Image 1 (tube, rainbow, N blue to C red):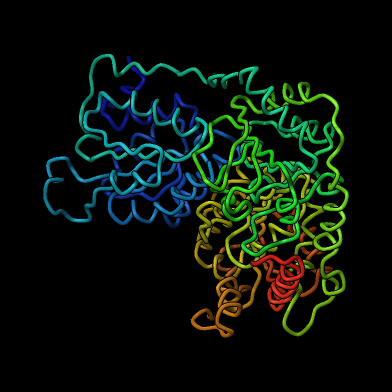
Image 2: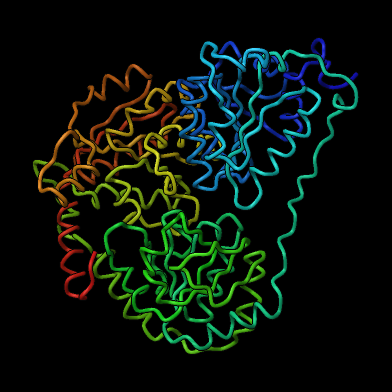
Length: 567
């Protein structure tokens, strides 16, 4: 008997559940609704665990981070109408942050779709701009082909989200024939193309001629498993490395060739390397990580593009040579072809500037707390030993994201996850749930502002039900700090960004979580030790002094003026 007939008559919904099993899916995250109950019933008879979340955005964020950490598509499920729209943000974030996700939504019956109908919107069209493919199932027999294509597209370079819409009458319709026999797909990824000898020679010539080259490493280095190859390439050729927000950890921060992170909207000290470079070697970099017009206005500096995909035409990204293929192999071939070269003449000076102005920034302030709260750098410092011990930090979006990107250092790729392309608030708590599922023996830390935390804090109940205790550090300032920062800089005043918070200790108790208040770096370090051993989630409230935001802006403004540049 075909697998999808094990528990009743074969239907498209049961065929879809079987296809998900064959693809290796172990969890589906979502919110049940009338129009997806046939698929839910099919999942009940499958080996897949359906995890009800407290909001569809939480489901999408969990699938998103699961996909980013594993390289295999996470799966999220919603019903039609408001369920589909609620899930959209996390799906869009997955596509713009290169996380493989398969999103499934229910839909009204095909017979009703030509007219206005309760809760009905065209979700297939709605999802088209934010996915690699959005498809409506019109016949049950097509389910195996659709699911197979969906997973291949989601996981192929560049990874992203795919959307499947399943109308309720199609879901319950019987299927017959060859479609019932679902065969396991090959999980062998297609080998990336080999770059031509001519391309490698052209890139090598550009690198040999450069006196002040710099490497700009993007998240593609992490996705391709090319971190060690990048490090060898940089060290043997003496070329310093900058990384995007999403590529944190590709070079250890203590390495003399590490120039840390670029991507702040303001001109920061690592930008000096890009401004003074005579060649940028972009490795696994994508424009959405940090737009070329921000670091190479007018296309002044030539670029060697090393990636698994060709670059898009861009006036600010003038490619003098491109090496397209598997990154690790391409870097090894290119390193051998370049041979010996004089190390970058400006590397030591750039590194000294970064050490003095970033690694050493605010050393005095970072040890003290005043009435307003803890300095952001001080609030990050206790996390670094945990990153070295294997913890995962998922950063939400807000003022704290700037400090995480600039000052939280790690030598492990994919240990600090930052929503960058879509920059969606609310990702931290559900993202930490995903990190704990993928890495159950390591601490999973959600770092959020009090604005982003309240957006998805209900997923604490999901974490408790799953038995995945997470640590949530909430930076509290009573407002949308990043917007306040921008308002202060542009208008000299703040408006419409303040709010009040619930009692976080009582909120923690309501969600069966521990609570701690950490007004100093020492207190935070102590609480983290306890929280990492706890069998329940822990909320740590940290009061933050965001006057450091303006101090940072003033310093960068002065530095830009002194360099004769404009922010």
